[in-house]
Amino acid sequence: MLVRGEEAGHGLYGQRDPQTVLGLVESAERIAGGPTVDLQTTRAKALAVLGRHDEARTALDDLLRLASAGVAADSFGFCKPNRIHFAESWVHAGSGNEPEADRARDDLLRSTHDDQYDANVRLHEALCTVAQGGVDQGMRQAATLIDRLAPEYRSHHVIETGRMVLHAAPRDRQERPAVGELRELLTLASASSRA
Image 1 (cartoon, rainbow, N blue to C red):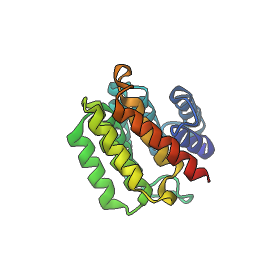
Image 2 (image 1 turned 120 degrees about the vertical axis):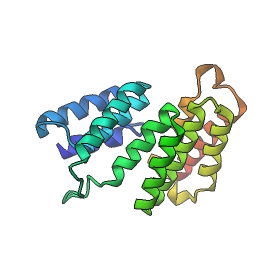
Image 3 (image 1 turned 90 degrees about the vertical axis):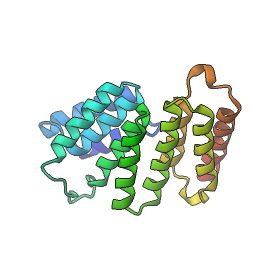
């Protein structure tokens, strides 16, 4: 169950189609005998990536109900309370719900001092901007953040979150200069992180 759950969670970062991720979540839930906090965070994020924002919000509400009993890190370190704030940030940013995305980001940043989480939730800010129609501004936000990151912090997860911002631009705006600049920067950053 833990392996499928981790595979599903990491799969959202360009390794698996989001629909496949949902299948992995369902498979892991069958093994677990029902939903878990960790699996529910992955479900909510996968639905957001698919643009199924109402379902993502429902999954997030289910997650919060499940977590209300209290979440402690498991003995393997997979389930941590800050993952809930991260999922909230992701889901709300993807739908353009800026006040809730900001609250979740701030809650996460208060609860952890992790450079990867910090970079990713800052990219969620850019995603939210794009979701609200600010394509050029969101692309510039993402590009500035990634460009300023030291190469050792340009992890696969950060680059893939940048790509999520890139893909959030509507089809008819994919040829805008700011979109092209972010695309080029992500290609260069991805190549330098593998070197």
